[in-house]
Image (cartoon, rainbow, N blue to C red; front, side, top):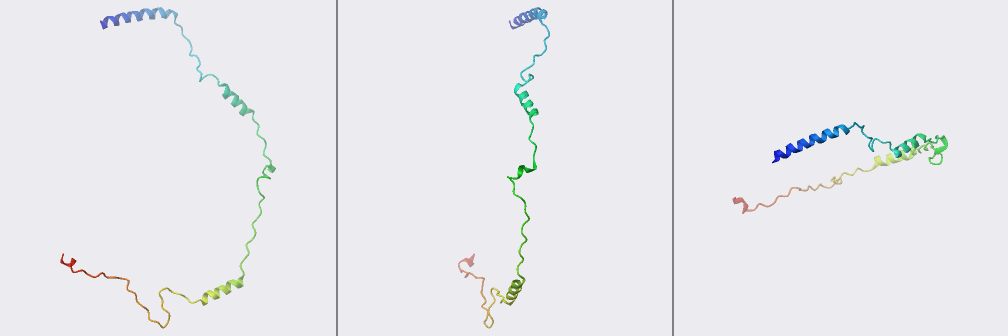
Amino acid sequence: MILSTLRISRSAFGRTSCRQGVFQRRTLIAPTAVRQADLVQDLYLNALKAYKSTPIKASDSEGHVQKWSAPKTPVSPEEGNITNELKAYEEQQVDVEGQVASGTAAVEEDWFEEEPEEEAHSSH
């Protein structure tokens, strides 16, 4: 049954293709929407081409930028104060942590603490 329907459809297809062959003609591919000129894009490009920028003048930045001026030279410290401060520094007594004042004996600290041994744990 399927075979007979295939034969009928094949013959019907052959007949219709012969009839349409007479009426068929070649046509060129019609331009699609993408290939057609985009009016908005054309207007934009024409506006870009017609744009004339204003020339830049040297006086354009006057209100926006401060004038440059060299910084003031730093004031040097007075030489007399430096020498007095150095003398006072050299005359200071040096303090060393842990050092005992002269004439007293140093106390020695024991930093290691031993825990008492327990008798119960020694039987292991």
